[in-house]
Image 1 (cartoon, rainbow, N blue to C red):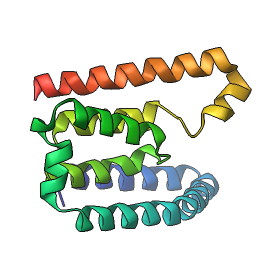
Image 2: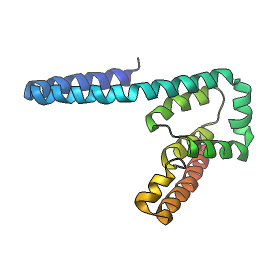
Image 3: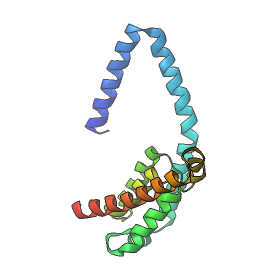
Length: 160
């Protein structure tokens, strides 16, 4: 366990104890609500994590490096941007996926593009956005987010 994890866990434990002594009812209600939220997220999180782990295991690192590595050029950005735009995965699940991709040989720039499009662009949720915001706003938001994601990926590539 890293030093940061120990610090975060300690701070959370201390603050939880302070909250418990100030108002037991609210603290227990908060923990119950948090537990229920955790149970609702746990199964989808594990399913996606298992699926991605299997894919990363089955796809050799050489193929990931070939298509998503630093030397693959525009193709790697295109693949990352398109897959990230289409997939419907919660943002917090993208971090373990990103770590796995980097360990398998994907470049930081490509992973940044993938994660940014995953979080900012929603091809799957576009019909819902259109219903609430209108076609022009929804399409413009997604298009601008797509362009911004590619620019962010390129900037990460330049910096790292």
